[in-house]
Amino acid sequence: MAAQSNNSSVLVSEFLLICFPNYQTWQHWLSLPLSLLFLLAMGANATLLITIRLEASLHEPMYYLLSLLSLLDIVLCLTVIPKVLAIFWFDLRPISFSACFLQMFIMNSFLTMESCTFMVMAYDRYVAICHPLRYSSIITSEFVVRAAIFIMARNVLLTMPIPILSSQLRYCARIIKNCICTNMSVSKLSCDDITFNQLYQFVVGWTLLGSDLILIILSYSFILKVVLRIKAEGAVAKALSTCGSHFILILFFSTVLLVLVITNLARERIPPDVPILLNILHHLIPPALNPIVYGVRTKEIKQGIQNLLRRL
Image 1: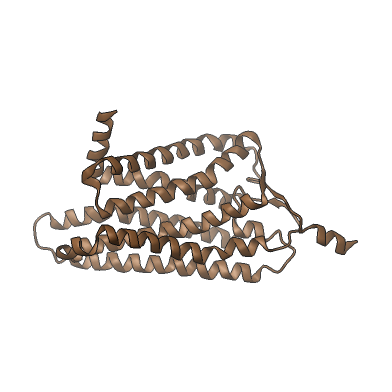
Image 2: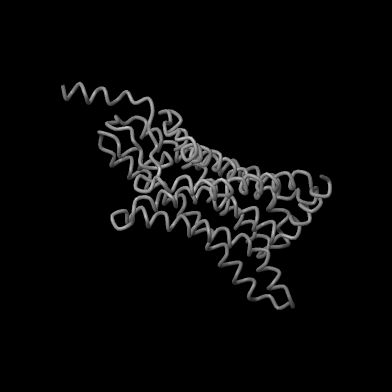
């Protein structure tokens, strides 16, 4: 009978997402700020994309990279937040087996794509400030295309095994104590040994995100070194302002990710609802902040948005 029960556990057709298992009464109150942040993120990124598309002065490699970042943010938001809000508002907890692993794949691959995009943008600023005379010959439209292909290929190929490994496991339970199909939340429901699954995600995640962060730090270290040597009046402030918006977003992205990792490692000391909330916010706050920070701090984008509003 036990063997028969174990065999039947393979036929899981859907999972149930239980958001905030200890504080489910929070869901209705939390849905309002989350929905407002979602609308803000979608509206701001869409506005940024339209502005860059319609404003001829923004048809430059730096803004093409920013467009790529906005596209990644939109996909991440649409992958996670509508399902979370559907659970909060309509109690639609079931998620199909295939939809769960598709969501897992998009979250893992697009999160690392976003990190890689920040790295390429840091390199763009490094060339602009440290090698200004060679900028137009190095950072070209062709460079952006190649960078985009590299960003997608590297992260898709290396993160694809994560949902594939999880989908091959046998499952003894189907209740996921999370709002999202994260690899750890899903795989721990399995009857099988998940050591290799966990090890692969750990190694790939830290390799991709860690290498990006190291290259970003190196780029800004070289930028700072060059900026401090500039003698012209106002040149330092202008150079730092050019990189300021990039650095703010990268710092916030890395800080939120680090806090999320720490809370997951300290699960025994932290209520389980805290990392669940942080996971949701990590897929929502950076997408909402990115276009706003660039819109406020970048004169060309601000002017482009004003021109767009005049046309409406």
